[in-house]
Image 1: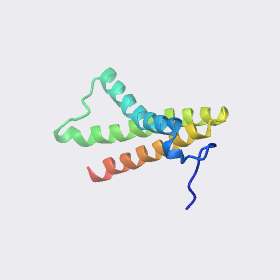
Image 2: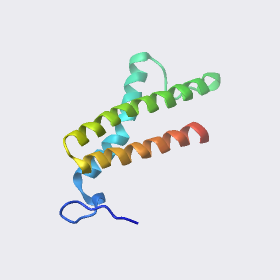
Image 3: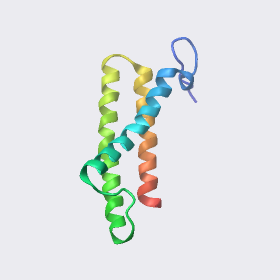
Image 4: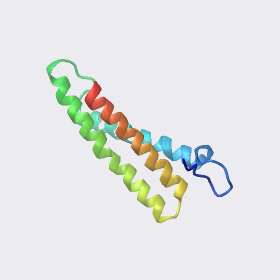
Length: 106
């Protein structure tokens, strides 16, 4: 398996831009969901019959908020910041995996 490296020879997993953008890419959808829930007045953790409706809404909002990550990804590519773009891309893949788990296992 190919081990991607930074220009100075270190694995990309140890570079600050990659780690920083990976974390940002995972946090942005959650922040978007939180802001939307506070501004539109619904509780993220509803119980009872409305719980499934809120779950569907949460999954749709999280999926749509990944568009912010896509914008950051293409912006990083435009300015030739490959490590930042990779961090955003890998973080977005993790977010999609977590959305899938939330949607089908909970």
